Image 1 (spheres, one colour):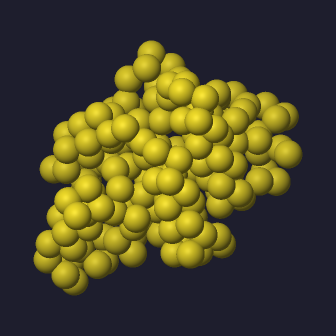
Image 2: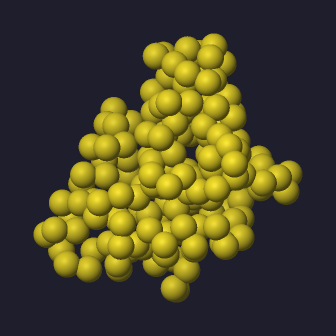
Image 3: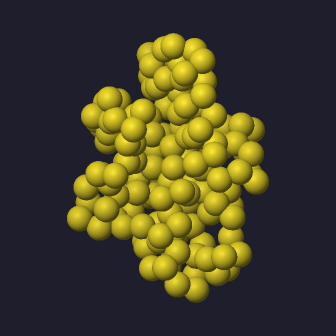
Length: 159
C-alpha cells in the first residue's frame, strides 16, 4: 500500500499488531517513525509514510486512554535515538506529560493489554475520523466535566 491508500485506522490496527508481536517476541520499541511505518504496512516509501505516523500513534494512544491504560505508542514508537518524542502531548496534556511518559515507559505491557487497546480502538474510535478530531472530543469532555482526564488517565492501573 502507498501512503495515500492506507487510512490512519488501518495503519493503527497494523501497528498495534506489530507491537503485540514485539511483546510476544520480547523485543523493544520501534526506533523511528520510518521503522513503525514499515511495520504498519507502508511499503512503498516508509520514510515518507513516517510523516503520517504521528497521527497513527496518536490514535493508538487515544485508544489506550479510553482503555484506562498507559499511552502505548509513547513507549513503543520512539525517536531514532530511542527517546520519547518531545513533541508528544502538548497543550492540555502538557501538565500530564511527565506522568504519561513515566507510566508508559515503566509499564510492562502484556499481550492482553494490547488486545484491550485494539478492542477499544475498534469499538470507540470512528475509523473515518482523524486522530486530531478524535482527541478534540476528549478536550470537549475535559472542559465539560472537570477531572475527566485525571479520572480516566491510567485508571485501569488503579483498579
